[in-house]
Length: 462
Image (cartoon, rainbow, N blue to C red; front, side, top):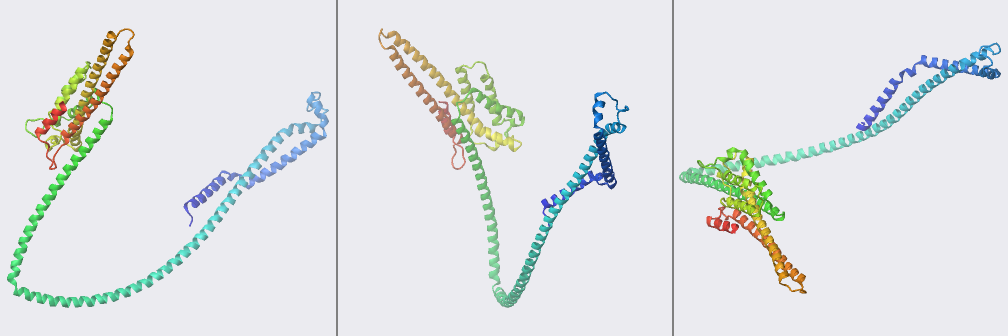
């Protein structure tokens, strides 16, 4: 058999040959070729005759072309005039017929070349077919040999199976006889011990009832353990997400007002676009996420005012911290998720309560620390200038005022650097305390006590 590439090559060669033959079919007409040869030889003879006549009367060229004699005057031979006029069209027609003859010959050569190529490919394909047929014959012969071997093995296996079946029949008959004897003995014993059997049956019934109750208790215990494990897994996932966000916050640049405003707007816009999140499971109560977003929404206009003084930013950030300190973010109960309609809303509310709002509180605390650090830096700078002015006023002429000012500036820079380190340490301690207050729980899954929350909240505010 031929593979796909060789079959396509044969088909393409045949189609090219057929297309070339159809396109040049008119070139193989016998009548046209005979007429072409006749006219070609006729024009060749006429051209030769004209050349011979013009050569014999070559002396008439100069008078005719110089204008002394006319083409058909008495001094010019008539055959010369006719030959001179006829040689040009005869030559042109001869060249045209010669080109036509050349074109027919080129088509024949192309067809012959295509035929030779096709014959070559066909010979290769025939050789491949012969090789493949020999291989197929060898494979068939090997398959026949394998079939004979399989038949022999099958016969041997059938004999072995027959012997095994006979042995199994003997063992089964012996086992049947032994079973009958044992059944007879057991029937005799059961007939003698009927009372004991009834007592055992009652005990077995009690054991079945006890086993069912224990199986039910075990299944309830397993279900409870699985629920606890799921809750612990969810809490671990929330803690991992919180630690990732906390790591990003610790490694990122300092917080800004725009960043905190963006986080507040994100939560407020989502909650306002879902009005059903307002209702809580309790009667005539709003949900926790709705109350938090309403409280944060009231603080948005203060953060968007044109007054960007440090005091206004500090008061705005402290207001956010006070709002978030009123709520506990260490857990997300079913009551908090009761207004949600689908898994997307449940995930958003859970992420908001356990991750986004604690991160917002951390950003607000970092913003407070940064603003206080800037205020302290400005105070140190003012104190440095004031000290330089005092030193310059109290120094006598010729004293080293520059050295004194450099020492004062060095002291002020050390104070500012110590202040920066102090601000970073305060921010880190605030983050760690807020994270601990949000995610500290005992091994039984209970949240921290209210006294611990009040203590940690007071530490965060300090």
